[in-house]
Image (tube, rainbow over all chains, first blue to last red; front, side, top):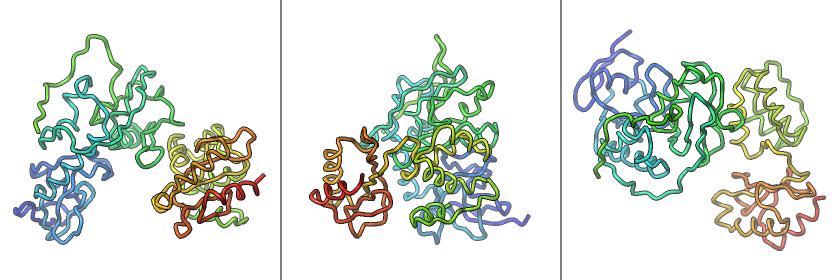
Length: 225
Length: 156
């Protein structure tokens, strides 16, 4: 395939035709934060964190689903991009009702890590929180949808990799949530020996059933801001 | 998929031939069942999921997304009040309050005699006549509390 040369942050970079801006950036160790991106799976562009500035484009574009084209001039960390990403994280945190101090996944939480990277402490925005009961019937998986940020990674992994198609998206707008069957608490036999969605979940929404005496994973994160 | 909805709105009686049962016809299938039985039962959803080879969650997702589809048994007449901005600005809250008082039910509920079901819906395309509501397939606009009683009386 023909190679394409683009300019990222002022440097000329060459990549294969057909790859996305995000993939090219990753190849060249340019760090673009993502929440919904799953390598090798079709992009969803749900979280909007990977937005970049492309010269000539009115709006910021999602780098995970935009293929590179000849002569593109891309800014991955311009002030406009950084401000947008910061607002996205703040908005996600505003309706995210997880209490990090008592969350088992708080030290390996991608949302929290991103907040730390961007020096976001308390969100500026006050919004209604999304509260759902914890679903812990299944012996294979525990779901706490209050912590879900609707990145849809669990859907992607379950549909495309595990091929079990357990999850779906139900309702609309603020009430949107990841549902199982007829919006029932998750308790599926197909989840046995799988757990792919648990490792893919960026927050503590999906986790292994809690075990007594288990230690919190990861080293403590310190959030300034 | 959007066509599936246009059909019911026009009250068109033409039957849709569903030759290949694939996911593309999902909305049409749901719409037909909704018109036939008045609601979408759990059994129907499960059977449909099996015949289309789609997960139940996906079908339920579609049903919960559209306020014109329901998985609960509904009354003989369905009152749909618009809850979107133009109607809200024209004081649709008052109309909702008025109807809930008149019928003694909250949005999402059905009267005990099965005469009315009250639902809040997204835009019904009658913003020029805001605040607007729809009872079955009839649109009522420029609503005032005075008009409500009269309109409701015409539905048995």
